[in-house]
Length: 458
Image 1: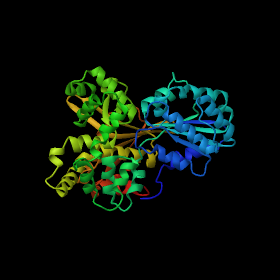
Image 2 (image 1 turned 90 degrees about the horizontal axis):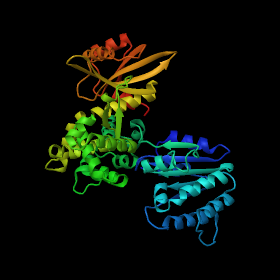
Image 3 (image 1 turned 30 degrees about the vertical axis):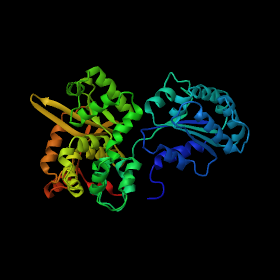
Image 4 (image 1 turned 60 degrees about the horizontal axis):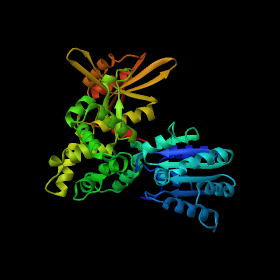
């Protein structure tokens, strides 16, 4: 598949900032493979720029290569410059009008020569802030970017004018990579690899999606099945313990105490490891909406590739892996509706935010009476004319149609959630709705949304 796909919002923001007439310093960060470099390269088209991608190396290799990139850009043939101050001065002297300087994989550069951070601070304070330079520092090491570029103790603290956290694409934007496929296939592919362009491209074309999954995840030596481990190795000092925690979470355990008991890792350590995984974008921390008790906190795998690998590939390999390639694909297809529950909830949450106008999204669970537990998949929240409006939603990816009983249960549970003046209701269903439910929903103003509707105009 050729051409650049999606990321209109990110590109519009970069171009808006670029259109100004003053110095800008943009910190761009996000998990590996998310497409940061591709976005920047697309933005740079037809602009005067230096784009330098640092390497993971020791010594002065990055400084030497940066020298070459700067001098090639300006057509300068002098000897290499040994000091950052002089190199940045050369950029300032030759940039002239609006000019973009990008240092991609900035953490690699700083790891090999930490002086670049202080040198950039001096350059910004003395020279760049009064210029029209458009500076972008980009990095995949989330912890480094937050600490050494955005953090309070960094020499660069307070100098950035904007920051851009590049997140995986939404399910609707991901669908642009999957033209010609059924909406069911699009949803399942998104469930397996999330909104990561590099992974989505593997599913372009018309080959059966589950056969591609079988090949990419279950073949001997498959790269995709080891991708989560590779990502952890690149980011973390002790990936084994993080791996143990993720494996435990993949079994459905969501509380620190349960994760600790199952993994054998002390609760305090589990909490610290979970914070790191949240920073990396692989785990999310969730509290019941409108409640503040930390004791009720739950943790979920939020990255679809991690969820799929640990639940379906590692967790169920003995069930899914068949005697032949075709049998493995069939096993995957049979088991996918059960796997898709949490994924479908996240898709519905995106729909509620993007298409229904509820900017705040949450969940709720509790024990409204002794021995009774209740849970609501999604609650969208918005303020309208001084009143708090909540949209309570149930999400079903099963093979059966949603029924009136599903709506009744949703309304009963919604009564236990505090803080709303107005309550509305929505049911999402892959398999549609019974006629009786459709009639009742129309009479009561309940939104019924099918999978096909979620992909309309996507």
